[in-house]
Amino acid sequence: MGFKIIFAPQAITDLEDIVRHIAKYDPATAVRIGNALIDRAEILGKFPLLGAPYLQRPGVRKLVSRPYLIFYRPKLEDNCVDILRYWHGARTEPDSLSSD
Image 1 (cartoon, rainbow, N blue to C red):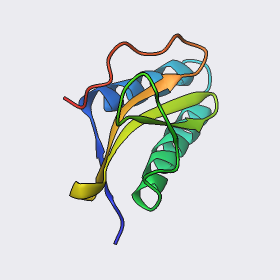
Image 2: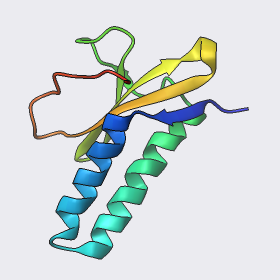
Image 3: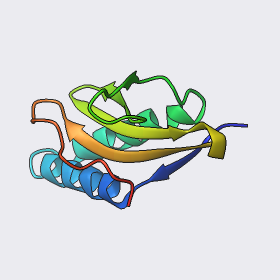
């Protein structure tokens, strides 16, 4: 059985912002990229340690989905993965990575 994927409110807001921004220029591409980012996060249900450790925050990892980064926290003991943020790789790294 796979790990449960839990999207933090901030991750959902990030994803909505990404899709909304792209949709201004190309709605079909916005849908495709939004779905690809969700699918990429859901692969963590089978491979929760797939991404690299994010050394600035203990317990947090990051998974690349170019040009975006998915910051997440695997909770192996709880059989779940918290998706914390979606972040464009060209931006400076996020200040906040909480799951609240």
